[in-house]
Image (cartoon, rainbow over all chains, first blue to last red; front, top):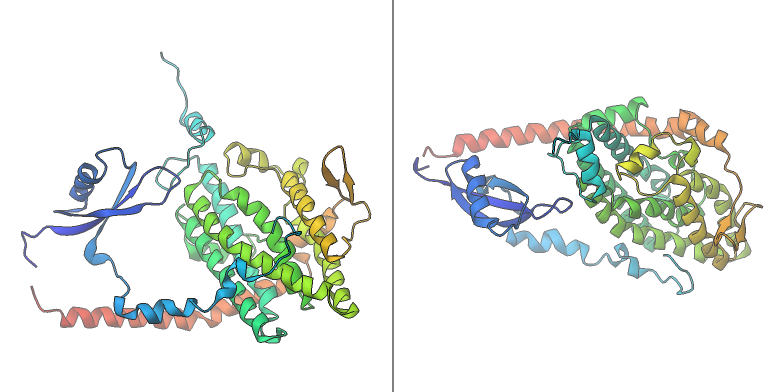
Length: 95
Length: 318
């Protein structure tokens, strides 16, 4: 790898306590500390966040688009996992 | 100005203002400990709770019933996972939590120490046990610790399926042959009181509750939750034509609630202390499954290490 190359980081921002960090975007930085500072400047300029996570992009393992069908199709025919699959009479409340 | 407020008081004011606490925030040591105890106990309950239901997977009365039961037990494993992960954000390792469960140091819900001798129990567990769990868990979606609250939101979404599939089973039996109706009634007789015990000791015997309420870990007392559960569930039993096994149960117009009989607290404490019908069996099974799975965990690690080395050897020098 080129020594002068800044790594790509993915940035996750928590907008307020109680909510999960959400992917906001990415940026380049020389190290993680700088990535936090840059993320602060780029992604929270308008008070969008109270906490930031940065993760080197090459540390993220993603599922392959080619395997989408094999991974996710099996749950399509399991309608019984949904509450609406069951007929509960309207007279029965709180269910 | 010069008002000196302690860090504990600041924390309390923060929680009082309905703010959520996140893993990296400062928190009192006792708040952390209480959460680890409660969340891990909750996780253990999900995992041990798979056993009474798994008992019927191979004997479900139809393929449809079997698929549903498998899906439900699979969900319970997932709930255990969400909760262990939430507890791990507090700095306790999963290995430690599992060790505490197996040694008996950590508890789980006493309800799962009762046996499931009949198919009707699959209905009753979904209807009553998951119903009682929902009552508690809906409250916990608003708990003050962020990761716990978020896990609860996911769990509550899935519980609705659990309760409805249970009610469907019990409804089919209650509206079936006299023998089937009898099965449903007997199951209700066995599970009613243990379900009420799920909410824990009465308020005057629940020493940790007050502090938990102050920290907004809990938002309703045990007795309040229990009463809400009774009020919701009694009409559901009436609809089925089943009788709640409590001769003191009656509608109290003045309170706008059902009065109900005294819980057998001796039984409750006895089961918690390890003397319920299935306590030993449940832990022994957990230990056995854990030990029998050890080679899978080791093999996966060995494979990962090997893959890692292989990648290092094949990566061209930069």
